[in-house]
Length: 473
Image (cartoon, rainbow, N blue to C red; front, side, top):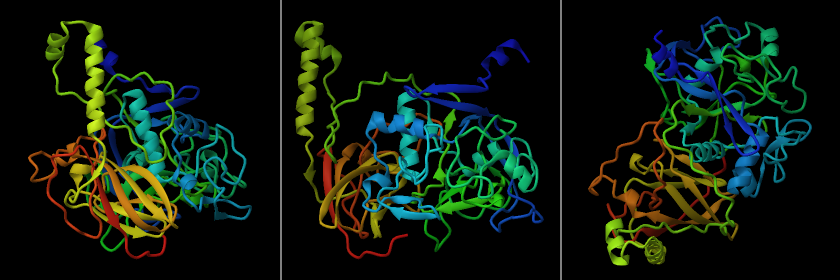
């Protein structure tokens, strides 16, 4: 290989400083592998049909599942509270016999002892996604959850046996923690045999969230597959992989699949991150933590239509005066962008209450927008925000109880300008690209269609009452 080409190869491993904790990542090269399991494999599920899969790009994958210590840095720096923490009912932790739901069960207190080196648990699909968005912003490198195909390719590391360490329960015991050897709870990461890529805990310890919605594999060969729709008649559930300390050895197999509602918060569910090989932007310096906003409060965006030349002309080129003028313009824009009620909403946005939250459906041009909302649960006001995710069947927003009403707040007109018919193009950026700046969008529930476009106020709010409260998932 020429020296120049060799020098261009990405390093086999990198480490990301989280400010007191390190996140280690291992290079997983692009390639082709056989996904699924043969009919004669012991413990095989009906959803493990064989297919040839090609992955077209190299990625970095977490060497271990995300740990308590790493998640703690995220929570400390951002003030983020998981869905189990903000909800009235808590999560499903270990009560000495099995998993049960209690208010006190969260990622901090799962019902068994843990250190910073244990895999974090009791995190929902949304919680995991928020962690990856924080990493992206902090590092300038695109982070995400792996697709199901990326995960299985990384697990196999070139093998085709049921477990990367071989076949049978004895092989499972070499690579992971499961019901037969774990005891009552998770174990610190990295204690078992890694695979050929140097990845630990791919089987056992905790199930790991993947990006895909659960469904049967499409027949025939696939290139970079990702399941973005749920089967007709089936509610959307996200894929989990790897088995856990609560499950039998067969669940640690490379091909074994599992799924949960994205709002599930269990003491055997965790996650691992995937990252783009190339950083898409220089990492921004991490500022000192600011005073926390009150619940539901938002910082108004600041912008200016004055060019630098115009300002320089007005102030005679004085840098100090330039900064003063820019500050005044920002303050005026901020004051002019207060929320107000409007009578319209982007087309295609719907909401459906279910149990302790609501399902949000939005068209693709709103993916990446941040939806700020407030709702009433048992007569009490609750506020929150959620990034609108790529999904054709919707995403579950956990509110901690049956919402009797909901108000959508802080919806920016910038996102609406990309709506069909609004004079904008709705081109979705590829996964590996840098995330777009947060835009804001929402709409009316109950299938009500609002106006196709709103071009006046940069911040709007839409009031949407909920009717009917089906049972929780």
